[in-house]
Image 1 (cartoon, one colour):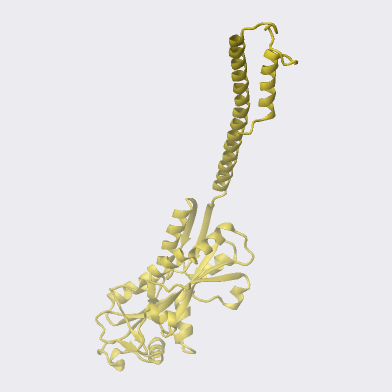
Image 2 (image 1 turned 60 degrees about the vertical axis):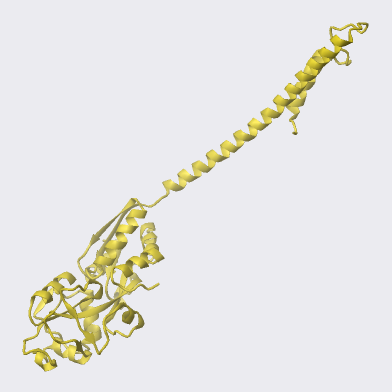
Length: 328
């Protein structure tokens, strides 16, 4: 073991205490012949020197351990500092009712991972969400349609999923398939009875969404072309459309594929079923993106963390689990 100089100096002092600078034993006459006594005394002195030297080494070891403890303390301090930098605050979002299931699932998981964060969600439609995001009234505007050119001047659009727009009818309806051309004629009022399409002799009740809805905008831009829609009912949420179609004989409506349930029947479009696979491949034509719109140039850490999460493997799995099509 390598000892410190301090330990050596302590040992030297103990040796000089007994021997003196000359090296002769102090208190012992040079003429004394008692070798046994000298041997014992020398043994004691040597033992004292060893103990002193060991004490010096021990002091070095103790200092080394203390240094390690100090380093550990520094690491703990750094960890505490990192913990203090964990996300906290409130994230506000507004917009698409079609995205409700997806966004609620992602929000729950995001808050579970970030205990200091609260996400407030309002569901007032894509148009309102986009407007509030552009005015800085909410952090994220959820939209189930593409941004218009003038909206894109202020907002960045992050596509977080894809969604088919399902054409749903009352379960009692015998029709299974419809073309885009005939669908446009139904919604423009050119076809008014199901028998014109091979169904029962029953009036068609055309149901859609309110003006400003992302689902309505997506449907009309894909299906209607230059035809004007004629609605019997214009409802304010995806759930309301599904409920109305389920309880109204002869009704037809459009709704997010992610929200379609067993209370209604989804029609094939041109022989193509509305499924995740067909939406992802592009075979099913009536589809649109799910978008999180944020102010251009925003440095909001919560917004960045949220978008990173929803596009992560875990976030995209949640998108899929809620019936939408992941983009990654």
